[in-house]
Length: 394
Image 1 (tube, helix red, strand yellow):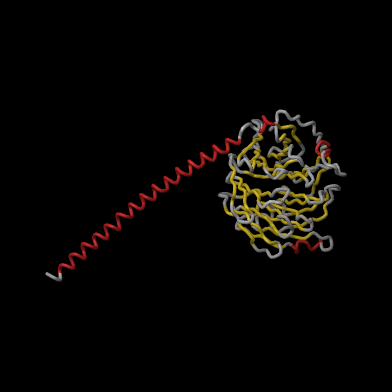
Image 2: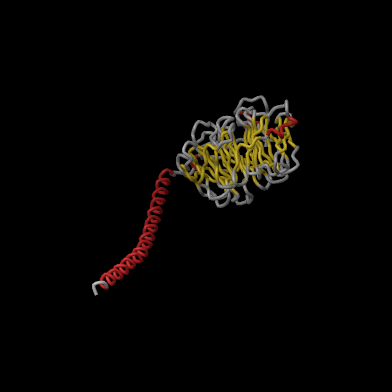
């Protein structure tokens, strides 16, 4: 009998322990669900409070504040030159800091460096893949970067001495796990900023090819990146298929601001000349202006008659004019303050894929799926900047 008692007590204690183990599991799950629900409510309350704080700064619409400003005069933009040479859709272009040369990349796998004054081709390079989706000039104009469906961003020096052997001098600097959609040099020839279909952005060391900083935060493909023109800060912006534009701190790799509002993929982003705002263009056929200081959207540029996606946006030197390249082959010229379309530019025979203004603001350049780059000149834009060349590349 003495031997049976411990057995009974031990079995009962084991049953109690088993009961204790099963009951807390359900209680823990219940408490976890309650905690998640509580956190969700707190997050919603914080969102409402943030929206209320933003609305305090939204005293009057930007269009109302600009009522007293004079309307834009006639721009008088005229077509001047046609840059032809690609055998496929031109997907991207970029200006050299000398305000004269342009680099373009195409579906045919070619990267061409143009003299924008004479329309001559100074370099014609063949990449390792078709659909070269991105290209960029370095600040010194001695290097170009390009990449696309090979998931890589390669850098090649520009030299007339060994131009025939240029194709052998492509050096892969950046490698993503999906296609490379956009690239640009960051402050110097030594740093390269890239965006990819793998939903990330990254900064790379050009000399060593080492990854310096990675930026995770997007939930879809990254289509566009940009840095302020003044380039004295430590931020850049990116946008893509998740309909959000994110502001990143270069030093920490963290997202410091997020902007939404578009109803479809964002194809292009560009900082305002003052660096405190930026414009976006989307598949929802609208352009939008966001202010970093107000932490909100401040203006939208759209019309019921515009049904096609925006694939390129950029500002004039003063920021008063916003240029937008559309999928219906046209360029819209918007008054960025009054939010009205001033005029429309024609010329391309297929969708516009890229649009950028020159470093001094006297010119814009657009690339198109019609395999061409067109140039136009506006005396109105040129009159605000003293420059010898009357060129507006569109």
